[in-house]
Image 1 (cartoon, helix red, strand yellow):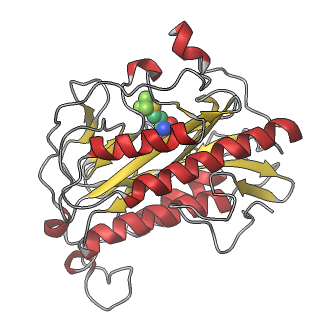
Image 2: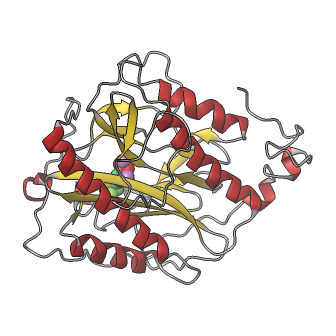
Length: 330
Ligand code: MF3
Ligand code: CO
Ligand code: CO
């Protein structure tokens, strides 16, 4: 499907032109997010097991896929449940006036209470326990002393390491009341993530995910980030395969039952160029237009995909598809 045009009727079907409705760029426009000061890394009690890269300093991105058996899947499910819980706890702290560092502290305590190590902490030198990406920050925002403001959006990305497994999930939260075009960006990204997951089927090519996500995003006037993708996950934080969220024609590798990976599209409301800040992490859109992201860790089943980053009682800040092959854990 082609990108919606500014003079077309809005995708929300209320009759207005797109440019005067969900495509109103004056409402989407934000001031560039200024990077604040970053507090020291938070300590993790000694009894909590660290991933290998903490002692070796070396982070591998193995080319092997992460394929789970019954035993390892049980452990991955637990790590993912913890990640889903930490994300819900962190999301409850989002409010005007709260700093992203305060949210990092709350998330950090939530990991530790559950016996989990925050996988981000000291990963390639990252010094915080979550990523917090506000407005035009596409990803990898570092929690700092900036106060969230009414009308902001913030993605919180949580990765928990427990029982030898990493579980990775993120959601974009509204800070107080947000305008309708920004809400459209957030809800389209949530739905795009779930549509991508619903397209997973053993024996089908990996590109089914991008085929489900990119045309949908474009039909609502958004672009999909191409330089970051999902990744195999489990015993390793970031492993093969790379999961494209855009249509990548040559991506013919097939989904296999038991493979575990993330689906985590980032959608852009403005131009597609973004630049890494001097901190070596924060990715800012060059035009400061907001972007949103959601992420689940999933495993391929004989009938589709199972979302793993959901609490034992079925809660998630991301959402789960109403239709399609993806199902909730039994
Ligand atoms: N959780 C991110 C992902 O989805 C990775 C964060 S790595 C960090 O893959 F070092 F920035 F924390
Ligand atoms: Co991820
Ligand atoms: Co993540």
